[in-house]
Image 1 (tube, one colour):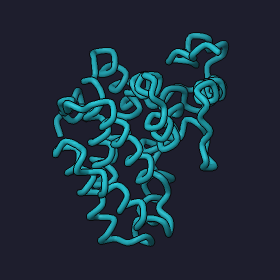
Image 2: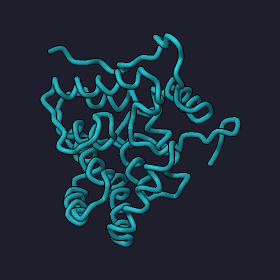
Image 3: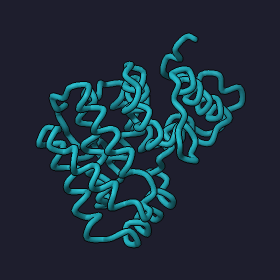
Image 4: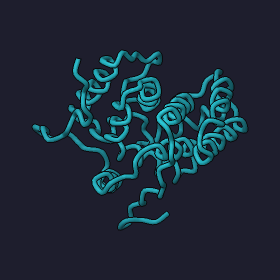
Length: 224
């Protein structure tokens, strides 16, 4: 992988041509498969495979690549890999606010912003996770027909790219899901690239006295 002064570059991708409906299908698929694998894994894989014919080949292929590994490893093997990857690697965190706010006090405000956006759009997650948990965010994006979900993903693009690059570097099958996801997003601009390089080289923000410059709500909260 090429580097920027020792920092891995974002793997090159070009946005796939997808409709809003296809983007929602893909985001729901990623939401299901990025969740902790349980005994319902086979049903989730079947549900995702039933929708792949509706998606562009380059996206469907990445979903099928993950499903094939999941079939081979089984629930137990995938569970062990999931814990090793997402629970023990900081650059593979599924909490989006970790990348933008680290463990600072402002992270709590950012999490509440996610919750408030979802509440105002009438969304209530069925799973027991914080609202910035990527599978929860993707479920919201899939079910909500407004553009706010896409804005939430775009506002957290740097974190998504750090996660994607880390999964790819680790050889994780979950990288296929992040690869598919970013194919539905606009190509990263210079600001996103700079934020990515800063995150990789310096890590997430650390606590600052009077840290009022951290944007706790980087995406618009819809009016009531």
